[in-house]
Length: 368
Image (cartoon, rainbow, N blue to C red; front, side):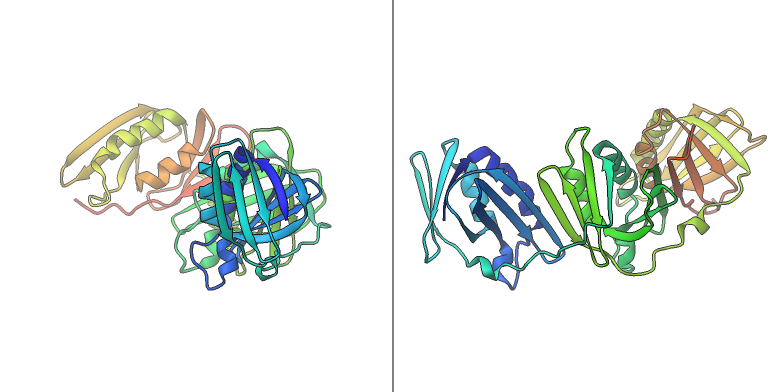
């Protein structure tokens, strides 16, 4: 196996593929990247049995072949090479030579047959969305994915495709994020994608107008992202019936400037730390919102204008991080907040349309 390629292209590809390589594994091959050289292309693959990332880069392939090289070592070597071009020679006993300018490395490779095969997915059930759309949908729901493994199914995002609409939903027990987008395809699919997978897909998504292709099977899913393909296992289990958690009726509606609300919450939250936890109290009044926070180091208060149909006042307390996470992902200059009482979920929606819906559970206020 002999190939030549550009250092920068290879270093970038290795850096991305390496995200799917475990630092330690009982199977040595999984700690490596699989290199396949053929047809003037070099295919690079990393796989941890749950997530696999594959890409191809242009390469001058003199002799075709396959080999597994330790991912972290090979990536570090390529990054430090002095020349823009590198040459790799691998003999029948898997001795590897890497040459670039005045640098010369010799490594021992592993048999490519020891590298597990990636899962395959039937491409008959596929969905295409503009990259900008899926990027927005993932970003506006990923923040609410649970990081607690007590219910593994909620460490992922639910994809529901039916009635010419694709809906993403994430929940962590304290908040809910729903994002919808109309589509032309007549599909009816439902699956749960791990949050770790979506974070990698989000990181790989380019700033372009091209389409992203998603192929979903019974156990696995593949995202085709530009020159990359990301294959992942799906999560099994019963996802929360999130529709039933959304309040059907609304007693009060508040219109507020999103950035003003974020900045006001952040100001009163300066007294809150990981050690000094305290909810932010939010007093909704007819023409303004009054915020306050009280910890052992002091008190803070702030207020901002708002339009509402509240005739007297309504006080609700919430976790400052959960609320600012939701507000920062609205992508709206102005939002609508719907309320039903001090212990009812806080509902956040766009001023126009229904592309997203965020719920933040309130915190019970302790009597002072």
